[in-house]
Each structure stands twice: as C-alpha cells, then as structure tokens.
Length: 142
Image (cartoon, rainbow, N blue to C red; front, side, top):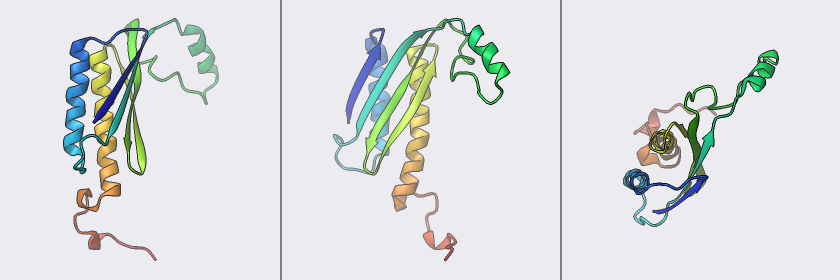
C-alpha cells in the first residue's frame, strides 16, 4: 500500500506517523487483492485554532434552514485537527473525514469511518464479501 501523509500548519511526529502506518496495515488485511502495492491511501491532516464563532452562530440561529459549521460545535479545545482520508480502489474512491482534539484522535476517527465505508464497498462490489452469502435468497423485482 502506498501511503501519502500531508500536513498543514504542523509537522507530524514519528509516533503519529507510525500509528497511521499501523492502521493502514490493517486495511491491507481486509483487501481481497494479492498485490499489496495497489491500494493508494492519501492522508491530509490540518491543524486549526478555533476562533470565536459567536457572530456566525447568532446569524445561523436566525436562519433555521442552515446548521452550524461541522466540527465547531463539538470541539471544545481551542486547537483541533481535521482532515480527510482518501483510499483509491477500483470502481470507487472512498473518502472519510476526520476530526479530533489531537492527531491521534483525529486519525482514529478517520480510520473508523474508513473501515465502515470499506465494509460497504466490499459488500457491494464483491459477492464473496457480501452480507448475503446465498444470493438466491434476495428478492428480485422484475
């Protein structure tokens, strides 16, 4: 598996990088392909300093159709990390978003979502990995 780790506004530590590589190794175990070099994983992590969003939240309360910004209402730490994980597979690219108070927490959140998306992908594209082992039991509408 080819892994590309990009960071914005900080440098990733060796400990966090080895954590990303270890979780990526778990992804390879779930892959049905013989070639371990095929899947490509892009990891992008950004560091943010939370700014006051009171003016935005007051405006959004008036407009009930618009929800508050993603992540800002759930992170109570002034510094947080977010990003995306992109796994390039045949027929589809799986993208998972991550958010956390630390790099470790954000990466764990992103890989948890990526594993869920990969289970859905395998069930949809590979019959042997489907939830329904005997496809004759599935109703067919004509």
